[in-house]
Image 1: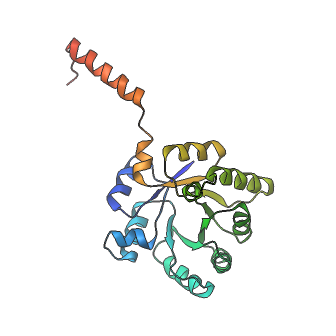
Image 2 (image 1 turned 90 degrees about the vertical axis):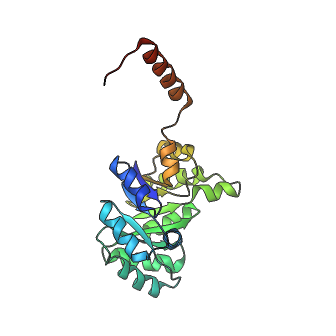
Image 3 (image 1 turned 30 degrees about the horizontal axis):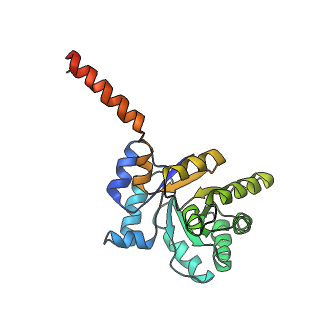
Length: 217
């Protein structure tokens, strides 16, 4: 499974990237705006740091302007994936940009039917939003399962990018089902290391070492 980091914070990306935990980055204009920096500047810096795809989102809603913005975004770096919404205009933009040879991430997916359309339009990634479905008492993981089944049935190459990840359990369940990618905030990815028995075992180990007076350095 690939790990994408859902942030525009350069330091947070760098920390995880140094550990080999970053296969790509997803971001959006809102996330970058919070950093108080220029969108193009931040995106270029992230692309230079990370080898994998960096999703950069269009701000338009009509197909022609999305295509124009997408073509501008891919000039930033060779690893840009243009992020477009799962609307009819977004699918039109996806088809044109993917035919141009660019990576496209179709986002705001909430149904398997939408995911099927995105795959037909040539999407590189489909981003189903797990957490937002859970928020309205629907099962976000069920959507991941449905998309995985459909894509496997017909050999679609579009990668399932599980998004709106809220917890480590979302990551675990996505891995079990077979999502190709998860994108999550750095805090959630780092929380995967936590387990109370690990903490308990380490405390006991340190107590034994201290009692025995053992030192390596």
